[in-house]
Length: 326
Image (cartoon, rainbow, N blue to C red):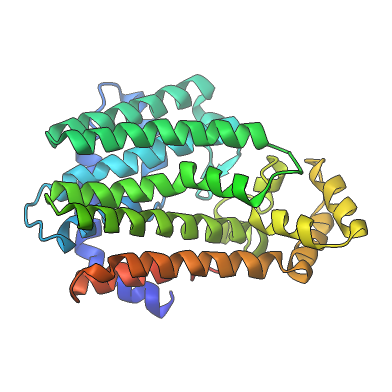
């Protein structure tokens, strides 16, 4: 465990414990099968970062009520729903180191439990009795769905641009981080300036988090990653390290990369050769640099808040986005 991770966990252990209870207690499905599948994805080792961001965003805006934690379960349900759906669409075999739900219970059940979790998040949002929070959650659901469709359209496309990539991760990942932070501020009835600042923090943090996550596919291993290394590429997903390398490397290596990514059955040796090219072309370093820029932007966004333990914690969480085995 890194010092930074230890420092963060030591300060949020009570919040994470309360969030864990809230996720379990607010689930309450009618059918045991729904509970079994939902718990398979919900309690398989997730970091609870998104609900934690809502709680901390409410706290930094002065919110003292205890209901921030129960409402924060909204964002873990939304996240889990997208994982169930994405794994099925992508044909993934592993999620968080264990079998993907659709491989255990079948495609129809995985889809419908994902739908249940989406609906459950909206039901919880309605209990806030705040139209702007309800609108935020509905908007997140729309945006993430379109992000997945956009990614499907780009699947296996070797001409994908950095702008295409940024738009996909904004819709698929950053919008949920942004919504969690915005909703915390809205729950606290914060000023519009603070709502906007926390929304920007969340959006930039989400972009950095996804870039770091995409890097792990090339610098990590299956045990750490929780899914098969090279899975993104086998699924036809070209992320920033590869997109950059295709732009910067010479014709011979570019043709080799294009040939490799046209096949889903590439060998371990092929993948290792690709990783070497990504390092040589600057694709790995460029992605790290971009992620760092968004982390700094996120931290700048919350500079409007007075110094406090919560602001320091949000700063550390932003830095942690870059330290996950990068």
